[in-house]
Every structure is written in structure tokens, then in C-alpha cells.
Length: 539
Image (cartoon, rainbow, N blue to C red; front, side, top):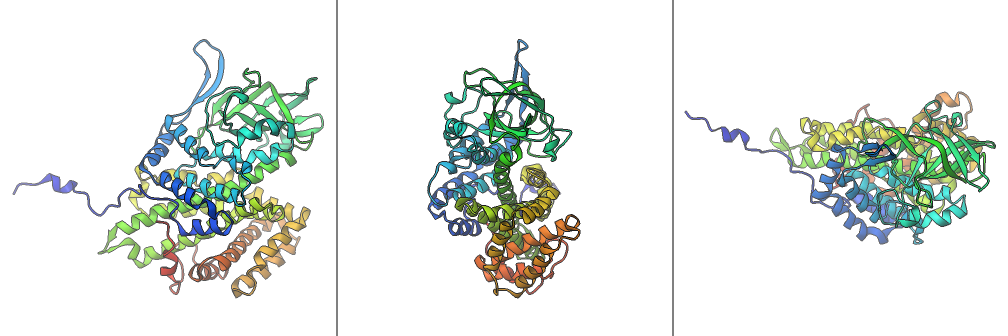
């Protein structure tokens, strides 16, 4: 008998690529956008969602990570240039994302819900590719901090709120749009920024000169940076442009690019300052207080970014399960896979709902609520991302372990937001500071949770227990992670009880608050309304 080798190469029972779809076709995302006041943005969100789901955009995302940024310290003649070269796909991603309004443009948009609209766009762009979102996020976050220096804001804010992406180093006034970065940490201090040794000396013309070395400064090709340095009056915040107003290069020596676990499309660097020109932002000696305005907004983006990646991972797992058959049935119809997907869907809906609620609070200026809720959300949603992405990857089996699936890139990105802008411990301690120094933040948090009072006995019980924990000063630091985790779950439950279908809210309260759940995803109780939960899976 003659063999027919071609039969072994007939591909069956494989999911097609998840492309050519509208990534905004997502009930959870759209309901949150409407609820938080940006219904007017829905049509534009769908337009951007079709771009995010396009084959071309997915190719750009892959190429931007395969062809990593390259540092050029000198030109051919030996002159320092300190530039980073990116693959054209990176620039394509940046151009589309900035044009869609995910960077600073919300600050120039007076419509109610502008920051919520921007949050939805930011989430979709993050689902596509996370690395290029770092400069986008910092550009958004810099504006409230820069406003502490009105004369500087007058010059730079119109360009930071532009929807034009214009790469390359030129005098700021010659460009149609600017990007911003941040330089806080140094190798001897890390999170303890008060241990910084970068110095700042005031000049007769009102500028300052900086000298020092920063340990982790992302996006060195951005146009301006907020930097912490030690002035005579204490740690202060400064604006450092890459190119000075007269067109000359400021001293910004890039010593090396970081060789990172993930986020490979984004250049993270160690810059050295040596007689670098800077302008004071905020009061001398109040650098942390000034730059915290920027950190708060980047922490919000960490929540949105982690929620987006959990959502994208869930979408990939659901898509695979809809097309893959095992033991005579589609994976999505197999009871055990239904449990896993439903559990991931609960986690994703809770994260997305909380992220958009925080964006709504930012839009409406709810500072007291944001002070505590951002730390709580940043801690928990970012903590859950690695576990959720790993579980979603496992849903694809060996297919998910292959680079071509895109899942390994999602997995490598998963720990990032938990580290950036304060790791878990930093946010847990920040919660304690908010409770002791800004009691109004707890009152705002209380009002949010108690908006659901009486709707679910498990939530009411969990809230009473949490209040006792919050009121106890004993071993506060030792208990901080337990408390902030519980605070996040109670807040998410309150939001879901008020805004999600009963199938989602009931199962979340049963599993996350009442403990009817195992230690891994896929351990929902048999009585759960799987159909009701899975009906809200992204397309």
C-alpha cells in the first residue's frame, strides 16, 4: 500500500487566528463606559476596537517585540547622540494610539466623561500591545503634576495634550506633539526615593543644573521628563527636556537599555545627568508631593492595563475553546472548561468594572475616593494578572506556549504592573498612610461600599469584618496585605452587586467573599450560573 504523506499535513481542529474582529464588542467594557459617563465615545471606541482586532495591528504588535529598540550612544564621528532606534511597527502603534486619544488629550477635553473615554481607549490599546503604552501613560499622567508650575504648563501642556505623534528629538516648540517620561528611582534607593543622590543647583537665570544617575527611566526618546533631585531645600521635582528651547541637546547620557523580562518593545534606560538643565516644578523640597500627582495617574493606568490584559487573555482562551473540540464536543461546552472560563470571566469583570470606576472618579475629581481606592485597586488587580494570564494560557495547551499564539508575550508582561509605580508592599503601606493621614479617603471608600448595603448578606458581613480590621492599629504592617486584599474584594463585590447581572454578582460574593472556592481558577461551586457568566465573555 502506498502512503499519502499529504494527509498528515491536513490541519483540522485548530482555532483560526483571533483577528478581523472588533475588540470593543464587549458588554462589560461598554456597560462600564456608559455607566461612568462616556456613552458619547462608544462609536469611536468601536472604530478603535476594529483597528485593535485587525490583522495589520496584530502584526505590528508582534514585530515591535521581535525587533527590539537599539541604543546609539555616538554617531559615526564619535559625537554623543544618545538616541534609541525603534522598528517602524512601534511607530505605527504609537501613531494610532496617540491619535485615538489614549495619551494626554483627555486633559484638554471639557466633555464630562473624557477621562473615562480615554480609559476605554487605553484598555483596548493595551490589549493589543503593552510596551508602547508606557510613554502613552506617562504623557497622560504628567499633566496634573506639571500644573504645579503654571508657566511651564502654559508652554508644554498644549503639546502634551496633542493627538499627534511626532518622533525624533527637536526643540519642543518645533513639534506638534510631545511625550513625557519620569525619572525617580536610583540604584542605591529604589522605592526609597528620599535616598536619591542626584543633586540640583539653582542658576542665576532661574534654571537648575542636575548631576546624577537614574536607575530605571522608561522611554528615553520622550521629549520631557519629571525627575527627582536633591536641592538645598530637600528632594524636589524638576522638568528635564531632551532638547532645550534653543534647539541644543540637553545632557541626557543613556548608559544602557535594560534587558527586561517583558515589555520588550519599550526602551527602559539608565540616564546620567551632568550639568543637565532643568526647571523646578512645584515647591522646593516638596518633590514627592509634586510627582505623586503623576504617580497616582500612572497607578490608575496600571489597574486599567492589568484589567485589559486579563480581558485579552480571557478573549484568547474563549476563542480557542469555541473552536477546539475534545472528546466529541467543543471545549467551551465541556463542564470543567466552562468552570475555568467562568472563573476567569468573574475575575476579569471585577477588574474591568473597578478600573473604569476609578477612571470615572478621576473624571469627576473624587480625590478622596481615588486616594485609597487607587492603592487598593492597584495592589489587587495587578496581583491577579499573572495568575489569570497563566490560567488562560493553559486553556490553549501547547498552542498557548508557542510564541506565534501571542500568549507568551502576554505572560511575560503579566508581572510588570505589579512592580511599576510601587510594588505590592508599597501600595499596602500607602493604604495605611491614607487611613491615618487622610481619614476622608476611608469615608469616601465607605460610602462607595455601602451604596450596596442590604443587597447581599455576604457583602454586608465581609464589610463589617473589614471595618474591624481597618480600625485595629495592632500589627498594621504585618496585616497590611491581608487587609488591602480584602478591601479590594469588598469594593469589587459592591460594584458588581450594583452593576453586574445576578449570575456574576452572586457567584463573585459566594467565591471571593464567602470562601466557596478553591485555591486555583476553575473551582467555582456546581450551583454557579455558568451560562449567565459565560454569556458575558468577550467576542
